[in-house]
Length: 235
Image (cartoon, rainbow, N blue to C red; front, side, top):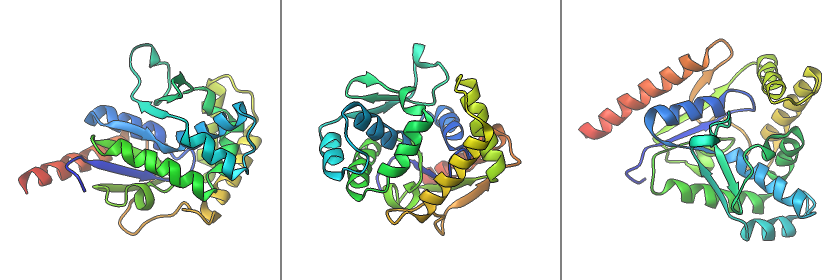
């Protein structure tokens, strides 16, 4: 454990992890890291280089020579994105947010060698700064010693509705039924995968966001972090 404060957040798709983590990062002046974006980058790079999602050796070689960075949005980057994602010096923040890329991310994230490479990249980012990191295996795999571990969840129908609205607001024409089916399938794959499945660790603070506003959830977490930081300073 270093002297920086780390918040680890896990949970299923559309539980509010991204939006909530981003706002928390702004309130606390932390760096927000969306680890799921890294797997989406892997998919985008594979698509651009004609690499099959199940070709482990080719994927690993591609990721080893690729550079992935994440920054809090500034200036013109404040266009609705939660984070700025740079892959090999190109801004891919929106290109990785399609449903096709999301489905591919569920596939490549099951490859152990891919996860190993990306986890190392994620951990490297946290060494020198306070971070809010969210994903599917952060509380026990990426940041097992995080100061605060949180599991955000929500009812399937509500999460699917949120996801559908997000896509509509971005001009993506997809039916609610398709979004719901994709969400249920994504949950199943994330929970049942053999490599670092989505799960709730014993010391995680579980928050069901179904009946809470984003502001309510953010306030709960920020209040707790402030208390924890004050305690650390006193000790």
